[in-house]
Image (cartoon, rainbow, N blue to C red):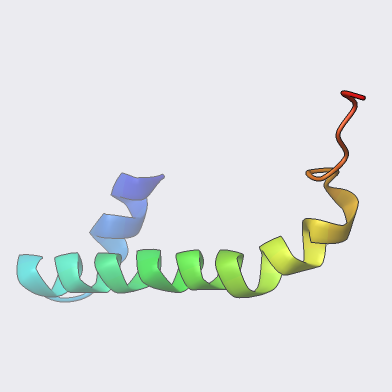
Length: 51
């Protein structure tokens, strides 16, 4: 899958590497600022069973 994405990016190798890094940064930001906060109420991180 990653090879397919890389082959379909425009430009020479330095441009492809820059675009790949930009896509990774966008996905990471989307996860950190949108997906994880939306899922947080359903993840029982603070439920401690030791008593």
